[in-house]
Length: 162
Image (tube, rainbow, N blue to C red; front, side, top):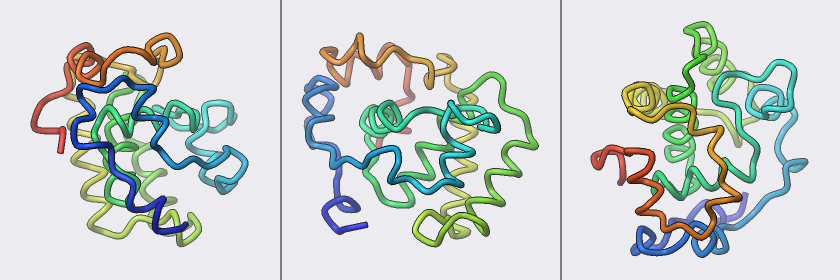
């Protein structure tokens, strides 16, 4: 992955911008560019996807709403929050994801121990958030809402927004 991709951060004033305005600044990758193993566990069309699975289109929008960039740490935060927020999540799914993210995924997608801890903390935050199943949110119908309005709607805890 190139530096422009890894260094992307939502704009400082992103809360006042619409979801569409911020998403237009996000460097993109096509779903088919994502590794097969990652798609197997994290894409909702996979027959073995884990709880919180979300397509790439919407995954990028969760990055924005949670004010996360595209670093490994931010990825751990977004995936953890999304999985933890799914009411169907089972403990075994966390074990499977952590194992794959730590040891099986290709190096560019792997989490180190620090990122596993970030992931676990984000799972706990996702579980504690009062609004559940954000992976099912209708992003396409809400592209013109401000980021702040969506954060308020989701009741995202202020201490989670970096």
